[in-house]
Amino acid sequence: MTAPATAPFPTVVQKITARLNDMLEPTRLDVVNESHHHAGHSGDDGTGETHFAVAIESPRFAGLNRVARQRLVNRALADLLAGPIHALSIRAAAPGE
Image 1 (cartoon, one colour):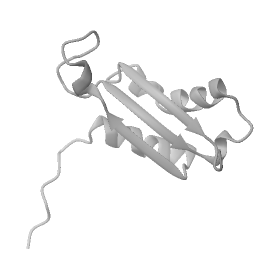
Image 2 (image 1 turned 120 degrees about the vertical axis):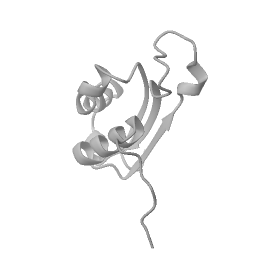
Image 3 (image 1 turned 60 degrees about the horizontal axis):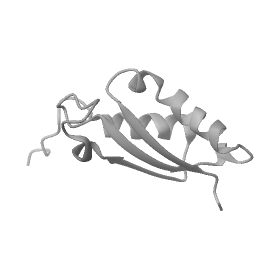
Image 4 (image 1 turned 90 degrees about the vertical axis):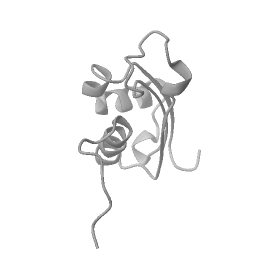
């Protein structure tokens, strides 16, 4: 029995997920590729991996305002935001909010 085929390189969604899991230890994380909604628009490089939405819940956000929470996410994804990510929508909450 052979293992299922996997992509040779991680997708941008996989990179975002791994980075946020490592750096912010979320209790909930949803990463959605919304690039198909922006095909042919500014920032679309044809890869289908340029526009994303993140919904994240993390204890690290407790006591922080919306801007500080988004800065933590942006800091965790800084190199991806400079590269393949053209647009990122962020919904960040602390547990229980």
